[in-house]
Image 1 (cartoon, rainbow, N blue to C red):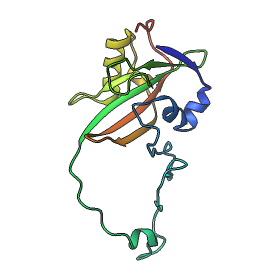
Image 2: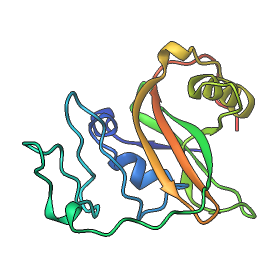
Image 3: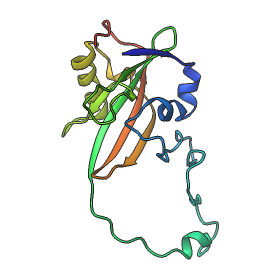
Image 4: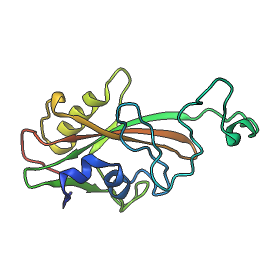
Length: 173
């Protein structure tokens, strides 16, 4: 495990922290900035022809109206993985380096893991942090920051990212 010093404002302000520090999400992933009331904006550099809403009935963007329908895609398994940025009182964020022999070995990631059937992302984080790092977290202390969504060859990953500044115990890993 490594602690990286980043200003907490950077973490809260955009997805840039998650996209720079959290592979399993690939660098070319077109992620979405955190949602604010009434807004949806693709991240900078993403190739999106998204338009918020037509202004009047029948008005459509030419890129949407003129495009051919997409062919049906084979259904991919959806994998829900939750992750957390543990931020200590000095503003450092806990990261783990993926071990050799695993997919994406050597890349850095936030602690977390797969969400089991009938389990909330928050409950999965509480369980994973207890099992992997020997720390106890109150689910009420988990604050949603953003999410990542990425299609791999054999599955689609959906990963909510939470921030947490209070936990009990000393991180062991």
